[in-house]
Amino acid sequence: MFSAILFVEDQSLSHALEQLATESKQVEIQRCIDQFPSRYELARLLNTFVPEIIFVDLTDWTRALPLCDAIHTHSPETAIIGFGDICTEHQATLWTHAGVATLLISPVNSKKFRHAIEQAIHRVRPAMQDNLIAFLPSKAGSGCSTVAFNVAGCLAEEHDRKVLLIEGDLHSGILSVLVDVQPVFSVRDALDHAAELDFSNWNKYIVRAQGIDLLLTRRNKKDPVPSWSNYHQLLQFAMNRYDAILVDLPEVVNEATSEIVTRAWCVYTVCTPEPASLALAEQRLNELECRDITSDRIRVLVNRWHESDPKPEEIEQRLRYPVSSVFHNDYQAVRKATSEFGYVDRECELGKGFQTFTNKLLGIAAPEEPQPRRRFGFLRALAGKALMPQFTHSVAPPSDRPS
Image (tube, rainbow, N blue to C red; front, side, top):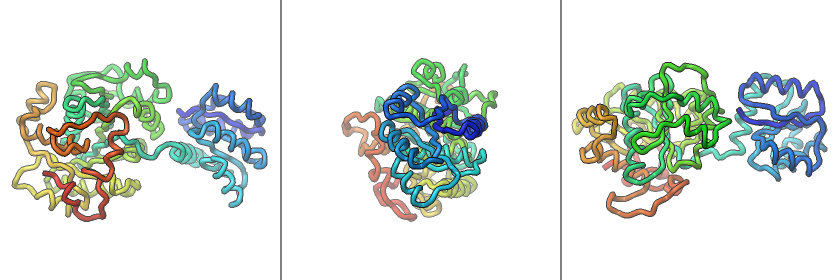
C-alpha cells in the first residue's frame, strides 16, 4: 500500500477519508495532522515519514495553497491530492501550479477515491520504465514463456546483464517447470508485500536459476488478488536493481497487469503463423491500443515459423505492426532444453534466433561487433533505432524487418 499523510482540520472529514483509505486497500494513513504546519514542522514530517501521497484539505484555499507549494518544493516526487467541496477553474489552475496532482471534489465515493490515487501516482512518477519489457502471448500455447525465458538467458549469459524475469501468469505459469524449482514464496507474496520490499526480503522472494533472478508463480496459491498498485510498487523497487526486467504475461491484460504494459518500454505480442493465433494477435494489439499504449512501443514476434508459412512482410501487413523477429520451429531443441531445465542450444537455428533478437534489442548490429556495456537505462537510448523506429500503421521500414 502507498504510505500517506493527511492534513485536515475537520475531524469528521478526517474520519471519512481514513475510512475510504481503508476500503481502498491501497493507502495506509501514517499520520493525521489537524492543523497546517510551519515550513520547519512540514520538513520534519516529510523527512520522518517520507509519504508517497499527501492529502490536503482545500476548504481554506488561501492557506492550503502555500502548504501544497511547500510540499511540492520539498518533495516533488510526492503525490498531492487536494479535496474539498467546490473548485473554480481559476482555483484549479492555482492548484496545478502549486503541485497538486489531482483533486477530489465532494461527494467522494470509493471508486472516485481509488481513481484519484491512481491518477495522482502516475502524474508524479515516470510513465515509462526504460528497462522493462513485456511479452504478451496472442493465445495460450504460443510459446511466449519459452521466448521470454531464452531472451532473459541471452541477456544474462551472452551480454552479462543483470536480469529479472517476472511470471505474470498467476494461474498457469510454467517458468518453474522450465527451471525445475518449486518456490517457497511466489510472485503473489512479493506483490502482496510490495510496499515493504527491501534487500533482505527481496532475496526471500526471488529464485536464482540459470544466471537470472525470477519471481515465480505457485499455481496452487490463489490469494491475494493483486492490484495495479502492487505491480507499481514492485516495479518501483526493482527498476534500479536490474539492467533488464522481463515480464511473461498471460494473454489477457487485466486492470492489475495494465500497469506493466503501460510502463513497459516495449510490449512484444508473441504469436505463431497459424490462423487462430494471428486472429487473436490482432485482438491483443487492438486491446493494447485501447489501453493507450502508443504504436511505437508495440511489436510482434512470430514463433514456430516454417519456410512454408506466411512471410513476415505478409504478417506485418495483416497485423499493422512490425515483426521484430521470427523464431524458427524446432520442437526437438525446445524439448531437449526443457528436459535439461536450461536454455535452447545457442548453436541451433532457434538458439541463434534468440541471440539475434537479443542483439537487436541492445542495438548491436552484429554479434562480433564489440559494444560498451550499458547499465540502467540501456534500452531508452535505443528508442528510434533498430526495434523502435517512428512509423505509421504500415509495414515497418527495412531496418526493422526480421532477417
